[in-house]
Image (cartoon, rainbow, N blue to C red; front, top):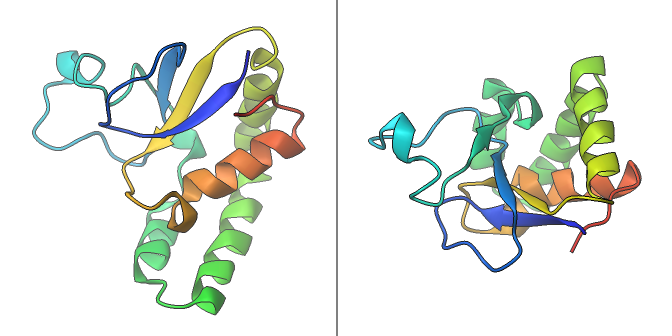
Length: 128
């Protein structure tokens, strides 16, 4: 089993398992009852999303230096006990359960989910 990192709102793939939304806000204009059926997420985990200020920083990062500043600050947020415990839990679950984590961003390389994937691996997760 393994954790997949996905873009929320895209069609699910075979074996993807439960989809976890690691975003600050739910999708706009989508009824809560339809989040899963419209391929956004089954469970919402905003605790693994960057803080509101960091989301703004990431969206405004125009160069590698600004992006690296975001990464450093997001990693610091994920060291806080609630987030660190969730990362450890997901890493452990990845050895026996298929699930995916995701965000809305189009480019994974400029999205917190790329950092989240690295953090999960550092916590011992099986990632695809």
